[in-house]
Image 1 (cartoon, rainbow, N blue to C red):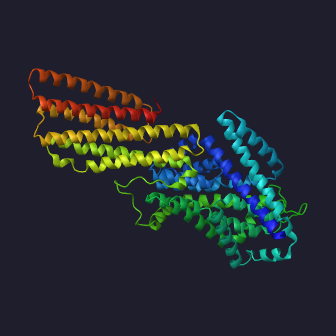
Image 2 (cartoon, rainbow, N blue to C red; image 1 turned 45 degrees about the vertical axis):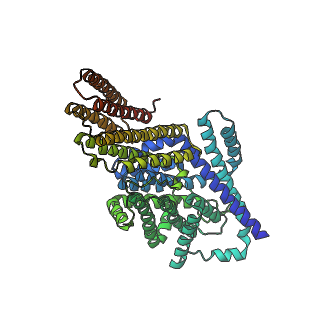
Image 3 (cartoon, one colour; image 1 turned 60 degrees about the vertical axis):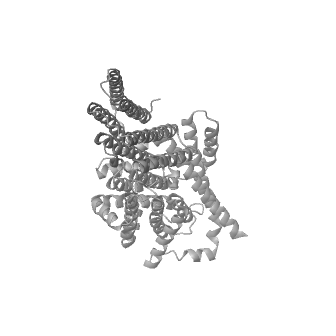
Length: 557
């Protein structure tokens, strides 16, 4: 029963720590989500800027896993290139060490007040920004409460000879012992899927004297390998090869870095000790009230120094790392064919920003397919050739199915904890998907009208075909503008959209009046003339749907 109590208290403390990390990360993401997206999407090709951005973003959300999942989502959506994403990941590994630096401070006395304040703000504040701040404070309190619970649970083991003899196996003095420590840290982090949690557990065990500083440092190195499992899992369910390569680069970066540190491990440990003592911290094995109070600071500094050194090294060889990731990526994982129905990765549910990036990519694919469908129908009318309309039925059916899948996924995201900006983006995506589907439906009606023209052997006059050429050119130009602006609208987009919408409406009204006048004067046949007006009306509707999409993109009602 003694050992069961120790186990329950330690695991319970670890659970509180993980819950605190998750709560704090979610609160930070909710508060800083829009800024994070803008920062990541504005990354340049400069690898140093990318690395600094990764460190900043991860420090903001306190989770390298969250940053990595967002990056993979953005790469899958085509918002970032592989090289840009890898540069950010290098910085994300630096940013995540802020958590270990934070928990190295002895702030457990603030845990319960932080929980009390966080709960009060989270559940009783009316303004969302205070609720988000409360979530961060609550997470902070739970994190340190978990650390204190783990410490209390592990205290009895300090005097247990059986456990002390077990931990002597984790002796990095030999290569076998060093590799055992690294492997244990990696496997433990893969199981928990939080390097911050396992680093916190390692710090607690070292503080209680169950692990020496070198053994704990070796475990921390292994935990840097284990954290790559999150990125690998994020690529499951996506066939985007760039996303797989991003995860592969992340894994290679950490594994190679740890491998190098294993080769120079004694020198690395000595360097960490020297640097930390310069700041006036006592020796890592110094005892105070039965605990090794300073060892946590040594581990935090070692964690930070490893990731900074690793990032600086790989920044020099970033193109080589990218090429290696490309070589190691499975060749059979290709981009989905155009007719593939959108499939969304549930792993992105933990990051609404990444999930919405996936939706945006599929909406862009919908819009491009709608344009292709229109391009299949219009030339057939102009060339008086029904065989040119092949494929529009399958494309229109795909658009309908894609809209359903996108709608279902957006509803799922909406049920998650999201901020106001994400809610507005979801509303915008609903409107965009619905209007793109309406474009597909309008093209379907155009195709049916064209088929009836061909079946009845009715031909549009050369004058009507010229009008059709002008109108279809305007509509396709508007649709092209919308497609370009879906990912990142510029400041003049709505002005251009108004010009296109006004031009299409004026041209339609002018052509309709002229056609009616020619019908009244019997300058053209009645039946083809009526078909002509209907065709022009559907093209004008498509222009209206494009304007609705433009309003949705810019957030206008």
